[in-house]
Length: 183
Image (cartoon, rainbow, N blue to C red; front, side, top):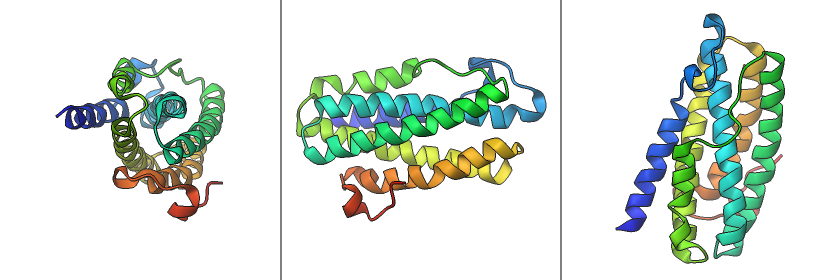
């Protein structure tokens, strides 16, 4: 079934994205390599979320998905700007666009544009992606060494958790339905 393939592809792309290495983005100092890898990886995830949100604002079928997509674009743009500022201050190289795997994941949705199948696949992709992002954030919070990068992770956590509540299990919930603060 195409939907199952898309979900499996989406999950695989998220795992690939969230397990990136510093060599894919540029070298970091050995002491800060896990912190730098976190910042680079979460940046790449932000870029993918922004692209997916923009795509859904245009191609989703339901008003709920379009509303959630707009929130995701707004919030991940703000989170990414904060992370980029930390990266610049620490001279950590950052990717300029989503990875090839992330772009393929979004391309897999194209045949479903404007349909309820698009909405279902997009919501599932977002649910999986935000679960993975939370796991990555939690790992940084428990084992990261750089206080500025940990502060960025701590600030991002409630936003990402709020997004997950809006898409969890592939079900669309507007912010009022999810009962999560958006800022």
